[in-house]
Image 1 (tube, rainbow, N blue to C red):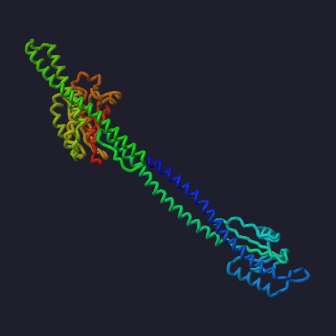
Image 2 (image 1 turned 30 degrees about the horizontal axis):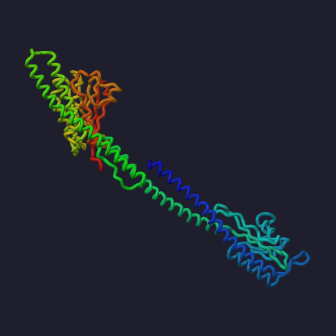
Image 3 (image 1 turned 90 degrees about the vertical axis):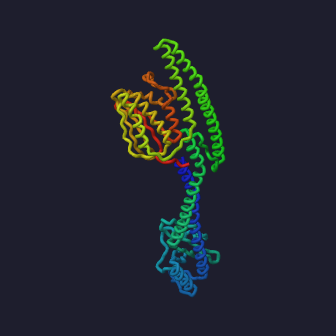
Length: 468
């Protein structure tokens, strides 16, 4: 969920920063250019003030005369060009130069300079130049009229290079970009903290749900940080878990109490059956059938009591040599397998795992017992131990009749037995008890097909203790 929420927040924050940064960059460029334009306007106004006192105007019959004011204007323009590198000139309406710097700069016939000059002759300052961008090479042209006795007699024109202006705009943009990057990094950090704060209760809730689903019913969500809605959800979840645990506890208590209470009357009944058998002829079929059913009922009650205790018991987890334990169980079941004509073999290298030794022994007993029980004579049961990543597995494979795909989905259900195996002794609770015992310690039991025939039961336990 975080991988989906975080990119969305980053994209939104980037869009906001761009929406703020782009107008700011445009405004900065316009402000920098406006400063330059204002300076040029001031310069042209100063030169126009000097030029209005230059009285002679050159004609074809009377060449331009040199006077002190003209010389002053030329010195000012030359100094201006020498210091700033800005071309400047004062031109009469007939395009003749009153004074210009450099001396070879003349009015062009067309272009931006000509447009500004013509506009100044109309007794108004030229329009602001087009915006200059850092990637454009261009010049800024500003023109102002020279007015004497209410008439426009000439115009001052400045033609400025834009290199420094573009450099200042670019530096300003770099500062804005650095600020945007810093703001983006800060926003990403804030988004990480925000998503962590929002999703942490969700992760805890998910982990707690998994713990409860795997049998650790006492797990609860710690109601801490996060939005108020998620804190209320955590409290509601804990209330629900408490109610579910209470219901399950009542169910287990009922099963345990019922099994315990029924055992005494059943034991008395079996004793009376044995006494009654002494009064009847030996080998009476009815008495034998009643005795068999009574023992089967006693076994079912014992298994129900074991199941209730298994679902309620706390696992004593510790680091255990799974290989040695499995090898011990193989040796213990070898005589029973030999008596049935089944070959029981084990491949149990030293491999550690995090398990309750007593619980795991009981689980392996149930699984090996089933494998030997359902394997025909001259068949084979193989027990192998291996480690895989974070878990250690014990696989018990047999060459018996196996189960269908539909039957595999029901393995471990209480009182369920395959219709093809109803004649085999058992209550149908063995694997249910085994699963409950394993789940209490974070383990699991999975049944799959064994090729070419038979069944493989995999008992899995964690290799390391789970963090709490």
